[in-house]
Amino acid sequence: MANKKGKGPSSNVIAQNKKARFEYHIDEVFEAGVALSGWEVKSLRAGKAQLTDTYILIKNGEAWLLGSHITPLNTASTHELADPTRTRKLLLHRKEIAKIFSRTQDKGHTCVPLKLYWKGPLVKCELALVTGKKQHDKRATEKDRDWQRQKGRIMRDRNRD
Image (cartoon, rainbow, N blue to C red; front, side):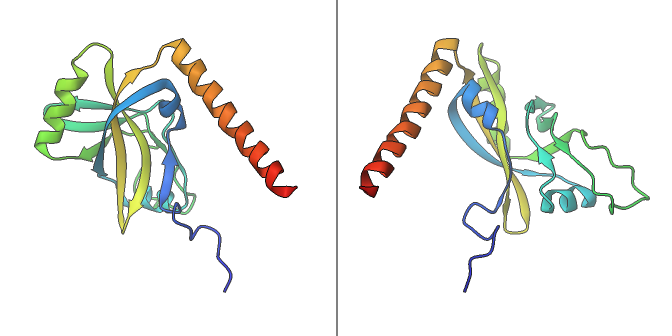
C-alpha cells in the first residue's frame, strides 16, 4: 500500500507564517477557532491561504485576524461577493483574550498568527505572544540554521562511507 501525498502527519497544516518565527521570540502559544464563510472553507481545503504580514487585534473584548489572504476559488458561489483580505473573527475564551490584551499593551510585545490548520472538520489558528528580535538575534538564528544543515550533510556523508 503506497503512501499518498498529503496524507502524512503534517497534512493538516494549511498555511504557516515562517517569517514570524524568524522575526520574533515566541513567548506563549494559543489555539483559536476562526469564524469563516463557506467559500473560505472551500479555498482553505484547496490550500489557498497566506499569513504573511498578518497580525491579531483585540478590540471590544474580541480577537480579530487582520491581513490574512484567502484566495477565492473560481468555482465559489456567485451570489456572495468574496473579499480575500476581510477581517476574520478569532474564537477564544474570555480569559485568553484578556491575557493577550494585557500582554500586548506592554512595550515590545505583540500577537501574531503562526499557522492555520485543520483539527477535524474545524479550522484553527495557532497564535503567539511575541517580542521582536534584534538584528544580532536574527543573525544568530540564521547561523544556527546553517550549522544544523551543514551538520546534517556531514553526518549523511559519513554514514555513506
